[in-house]
Structures are given as structure tokens and as C-alpha cells.
Image (cartoon, rainbow, N blue to C red; front, side, top):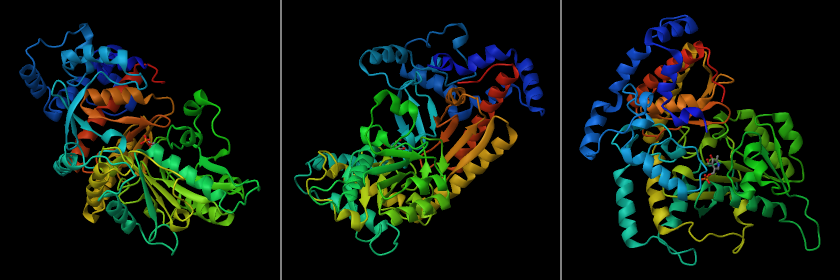
Length: 510
Ligand SMILES: Cc1ncc(COP(=O)(O)O)c(C=O)c1O
């Protein structure tokens, strides 16, 4: 694990870059422009999110225990959200949890206990501005009243039935989704499309890949060999971690430990039109692509690339699958990300925000695909439950509201422009990418995003990374411009600290 995770990132920067005045000098030298001293901006940050005074007050009200034990430099009054300032029981509980929970994720020493809007609160009552939304899931934020009401009402009525019986919500929800699809040519994704509900993004893609394989053999007669089995995916893609979805996720670190993967999966560089044209031949049954890559580092596909995929799939009779698990459902300011491109898929996969955090996934099949899938071809125990689909219907209905979508566009544009300004003022950020409320800050070549993430968290703002040294911003879609301003204020300080660190000659390589 990165050393910065184990100790206050702020205290590390402080101890490494010397006194406030030295740091300030270093900043000026490194940026060749006046930079506020560390102490100065730290003081201004104290008031952010109502801390530390509020935190300390809530802390002492919530617990009669003394302040958390500190180990010399690990207690940082300038970093009200430093991991060392968490509730005293946090460390003990995490140590106990680690004995039983499979350790798959490096996580900070913070335990969150409640959320409200765009904010999360930890055990000590400290408030964090959440720019992750559970990895692009909580589109309506945390603690939404309408979500709560539906959950509680439906939980009292009927949670689960299995697909062996009908429920009153799944069909209505499927109709709502199909009716919201942009109309394209007759027979394409739109009118007449059908929906399969499952429980996650991976499951949605797994089903889509199976449907692609079935499509490839639809004209094969008994005794004939089927050669139309190849699935094409693209570099940097993320489609999930089950064997099928993983086989379409051509990233060494995800795939290598689990080799051999499924046969028949090949990949081409993302956005490389010539490579895609060559790879998509008569043996291809399906092509899967994210219109805007998320995990890979927030890379939008080019218009020309998606149009090429569409026409090449049509030429060779392959299905085009759009994975909109991260970029769909309002995140780009359009209900479906492919509306930004004017290219429609044959299969569309959705998940993350579909029920604002209650697990659900959906596969949409254009009519020509739906008609080849027969009873028994696929299934799920939990998918399409009355609970998830009733909630999904209400969440989807709110997201598809044009006012909601224009809010995403407006605040998304604002976020991006503010990030671009940050990038203009710091050599640490080499590029800003994204659409709507899906923005990536590309850190300069060798800079490890973990220090950015740790410093931001210690100042009360939660961000995550993606791809290669990218800071990923995928906040709740209800975020306001004021909340964007708060985040940018923190990012400025974070960048200033990191520049001090670099100016002190420290290596920020991951
Ligand atoms: C584009 C994309 N596809 C698929 C998945 C997998 O979804 P899940 O984690 O819900 O299985 C993800 C998750 O991050 C994703 O971003």
C-alpha cells in the first residue's frame, strides 16, 4: 500500500517540505508566481464543511472518550479530516474487520455512517463532500427522501419473488426505459426493444456477451461449425470481473492472475479507427465499447470512432454493444451517453445509478436481437425483483426529467471549466477530459494520484482515481455549483501542497 495511506498525507508533506515560510518559498520557486503559504490556506480550509470546530464539538458530544490517541506528528489540527482524527473506535474496528473481510481494496481509515445529499459523515461526525457517489452510483445523492419512502413502502409489501412469477413493477419499468430510448431507424434500438433486468454491471455485460454469441450462431444448422464467435473490445476498457466481462477487459493487471480467459476475445486500441476496421471481420459476433471510458481514465470515444464501429458491425453482421454502466443514465447530461454521438447500439447495458445504490442492472436489446433470445437461454434469481424495479422506476423517472439533465450539463460544464482553470495554473495537471459530471484530471506523467486523493480527503473532499494517474470526478448528479466551488478550493490547496513537495525534490512516482 502507498505509504501515504498509512499516515496523514498532510503531515508527510509538512515534514518533508520544512517550515511554512520555506514551503511558501519553494512554492514560489516552483510555480514562479505568488503562492499562499501552507498555513494560510490550511487555516482557510478549517472552516470548510463546518470543521474542525463542528467536528470537535460533535465528536465530544458523541463520545465521552478522550480525543484519539496521537503519535507525535500524526495529529494535525490543520487537517481536520486526517485519518488520525477519526473516532477512536475506528482503528480497532478496522483491525477487527480485517480479520474477516477479504482484503481486496486499499481503503483509508475512515468509517462512514450516514449520508445526506452530496455529503458523507464518518463515525466522528465529520462531514466529507463526496465526489465519488459510490463510483458513479448515487446519482440522487445520499439519504434522498423519495428513495427512502419507496424502499420502506416496498420492503413492507414484497421484496423478492424470483422470475418464476410476475410482479407488478418490472414490466412497467421496462416500458418506461424503452419509451425513453431515442427513436432511430425502425427495427433498431428504440421502439420494440426489450429489457432484461439483472443485479450489477458485470452481470449485464455477461448477459450481453452471451446474447452476442447466440447472435453469431443464429443461422448455424446442426452439424455446421460456427466461426462467428469473436468478441472485439478496446484498450483501457472496463467491463467487469467475471470471466466473460474480464475477457473483454484487456488490462494486464486485471487479466493476468486469472489466465486463461475465455477464447475468442480480441482487442484493438480505443479510438483507433483503422485498427477497428481491420479487426472487425466476418468472424466477429459482437463489439463491446464504452462511449465514455470510466475506469480507464475518463476517455470519451470520438464521433468518428463510434460511427465506424456502427458501420463496420453492419457490414459484417456483428452486434454493437454499448456499455453505459458508468457513463449512462444522465451522467453526461443526456439520458443515454450515445445520444451525444447519434449512433445507436444493438445492445445497451446499464447499472450503477439505476436504483441509486440498490443493486440492479439492465440489458436493452434491439428488436432483432430480442427475437433470437428464447426462454431458458439466460436467467437470474434476484434480477427484476419488485423491490429493485419499483425503486428503479422512480429513480429513472427523476433522472430522465429534462430539467434534471440540463442541471447535469450546466454544473458539469462549470466543473470542467473550473478544472481547466486549475490545469492552466498548474503543471501538475496535464489534461482535463470528460462530458457532463464525468470529469478526469490527468496528472502529469509520473505523479501518483494517491497523494492527491489523500490530501483532498484530509481536507474533507472525497475523490478517486482511474486509469493511468487520473483523478476521477463522478459526483452525485444533484451537486451544485457552490459544492463545485468548495471542491475546487480544496483542489487548489492540494495542488499547492503537491507542488511544494515536488519543489522540495521529492519523488511523486506511484
Ligand atoms: C463501464 C463499466 N462496465 C462494467 C462495470 C462493472 O459493473 P459492476 O461493478 O456493477 O459489476 C463497471 C464498474 O465500474 C463499469 O464502469
